[in-house]
Length: 216
Image 1 (cartoon, rainbow, N blue to C red):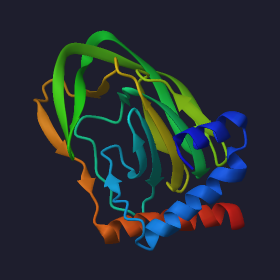
Image 2 (image 1 turned 180 degrees about the vertical axis):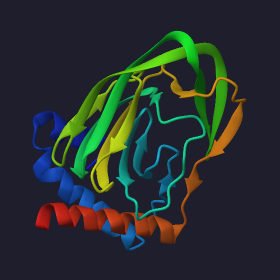
Image 3 (image 1 turned 45 degrees about the vertical axis):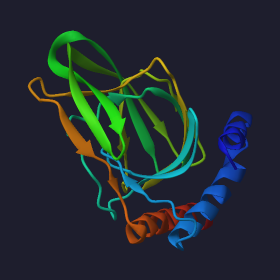
């Protein structure tokens, strides 16, 4: 299934009966080494398996697990996307803390620009305060959306194990932003592209999590 098919399943409320099987087939193939989809250690603490990219549209499988070695953010976990996100939770519990920024004194606002395998992180002239306003929790079989420009952080509760099907649609006028220290300079953070063995390991962990959810 492609972006349009997956989106249709979520919009129609039929994703719980179709997306787990689709994701399972993709994960099993990656775990076996075919097709070759290199996982990326995302700075926000999860593994990303980029399944499809077609212009402004993208499909990824996101995997969180304490069994896997992850990367950390050089700014903070509070961020907003330049794209609209629609996610379906395959297993685990995903919690989003939604908040609001306003002119203030506590955090520097940084713009994050992708350049190949690197994120170029540039401080802006804006200093802000951040106020968490709402916590939203989603479990297996549920979906959620986050519009471009909404500041949030994501927490995986319980065992720390979770996976989602993530659909992204780029908004041309948007920017990827993150909150960070007031005095942090411009810098580059590499998104670690995994080799075959580590990619297969991430897929195998997610395959096991999916099997436990639907056959346990």
